[in-house]
Length: 296
Image 1 (cartoon, rainbow, N blue to C red):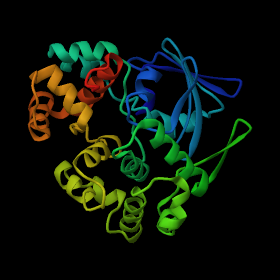
Image 2: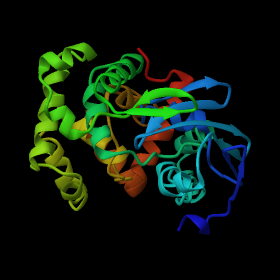
Image 3: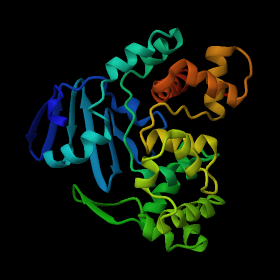
Image 4: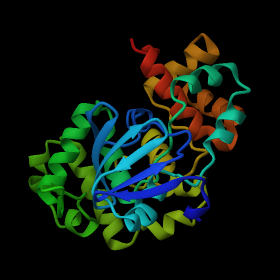
């Protein structure tokens, strides 16, 4: 339970102040490619929207401030979203028996894998395919502004991620305003499958990783890498190791010193990292980004 974790909660001036957090760094969490609706607005301060809630959050050492946030929202939403019940110190200790991972972890020691909404993760990573992060964020924000629900927060209006029913009612013409290009038809196919019940959160969560991957790949536009991202970020399969072109280059640089197939790298990751593959992938991604490894 959330209250068994060694942290202290204080409520002051309508803000929730959490002290005693370990293995937690906002820039590591939000800048490692796992989510697209949180952005830095100041030094050590981020703003974003998740689970139909807006949040401004800042950090000073092991003290994190969640602005205009109730303790109830922290318990029911943000504690789980930031995966605060998991012992990342133990994960890092186990992964550090690998010299490459030890170095990678030193760069991204405060990463936590966010526990994101499955539907939002499906659509977000469909949009991410063959795309860059600024453009992904722009498409998603236009989608939310056009078809999301209004959220009032700290005197401003923001928008939630559009729900399944709303998205299923749209046409490609409707979606043209978000400028997602050919991905429009993939978004609509996902919406149709979730709206009709062919796929559902409950159904997919009861499947094994392999079967969940197969189910996700019935959505047009969801291939090997996108399905692995959804498994990791939307379904909590911590053994999922997404491999795109960049991760492929990173792994070749760090472990092989020569070109390898995606299949070879995926097998190597499964054997090397096992049920911690998702954590390893995030540490490697952040490490490579900081050191520009794998950039042609």
